[in-house]
Amino acid sequence: SPAGMVLSVLVILLLSVLYEAVKMGKAVLLRRALLALPRSLSQEGLTEPQEGDGGPAQGRWFWFHVGQTLFHVVQVVLGYMVMLAVMSYNAWIFLGAIVGSTLGYFL
Image (cartoon, rainbow, N blue to C red):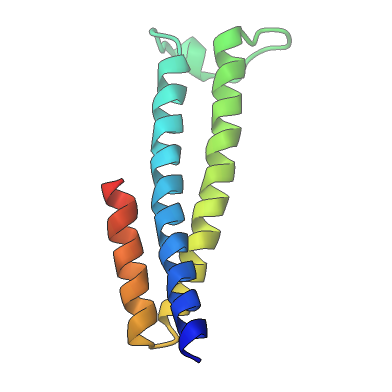
């Protein structure tokens, strides 16, 4: 029905906007993770820590990495969902994905 098609296009548009927002959130989290690293990265700082040898910077970096991993999973799921919708070969769905991606990147 026409109402169902409009709703489908809007859902794909919103999924595409959300995909771009998650992609940007992942980049922001990466920047914060890099800022949490210590200034001096000597060879000793890159090796595995000994027991009780993890400073606060290493703990923050770990949680930033966990956050990035979760953002990545959400990004992959959204990307595949949008791709699957586009693979229906419906021009309106395709345009909804393109407009949503454009709008999400712009925002």
